[in-house]
Image 1 (cartoon, protein in one colour):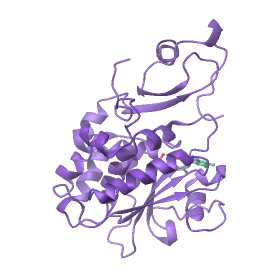
Image 2 (image 1 turned 135 degrees about the horizontal axis):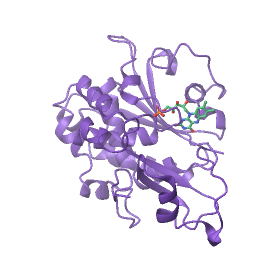
Image 3 (image 1 turned 180 degrees about the vertical axis):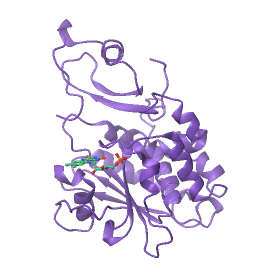
Length: 287
Ligand SMILES: Cc1cc2nc3c(=O)[nH]c(=O)nc-3n(C[C@H](O)[C@H](O)[C@H](O)COP(=O)(O)O)c2cc1C
């Protein structure tokens, strides 16, 4: 596998979650350099060009979803980051929230700007106490440094992020159940249509994306949609985080380029099967 990483591109020194570490890696430069210069539509165009498909399960192209928002609405628009990650065997969003939360925050600021949302939410599953704490600390650091709040980095753009802790229900991973949960209602799903882009949180236009999807946005805007599109395969661009558990020698979360053959991944990255056993079956999604 070519050693290419976007989301896990940091040193594992116990400090990767801090603002200091993110800045040393060139973090928040995309906002500082491009927020005032790019029009919101230009940000959407780059995300469309990147071809990135949602990392929450359904694989819907993010830029296309964003363009479903009604034009010229007088209602507030919301962005929600789905960090419910309830699928058994899945723990890749947790790594971003715990180890690289500033990349997610920068992605959410750029995405909020693109869709002209002034208020964004991160919904974190109730069981993820450590991830919640790390994310809250990162948000505080981002406010203190002027990356969140009013007049972000000298622009007129205002963006607030609220963290919402779930109470431990698998079904609120579904975007409509998640919105009910934020609204303080029972975490039950809603019928569609209306789709969230038209009538979502508090009845207002809302975009919901997975943690991994939003954390990929700084790279896309910094390097351009075409560059991202050139990574991976024609139908699935970019890199993908994989949570590996079960009878393998090195379980964990790995970032691979889309299209990397599974047997290479198992034998090279994951060290092969535990005890030299024969591979019998793989569950490629959640269980
Ligand atoms: C029962 C159910 C559970 C889901 N759980 C999650 C989840 O834990 N995390 C997630 O991002 N998406 C989950 N989804 C998908 C979301 O509804 C939504 O499509 C996704 O958050 C959109 O983000 P994306 O376009 O970036 O993938 C779930 C869907 C269903 C039906």
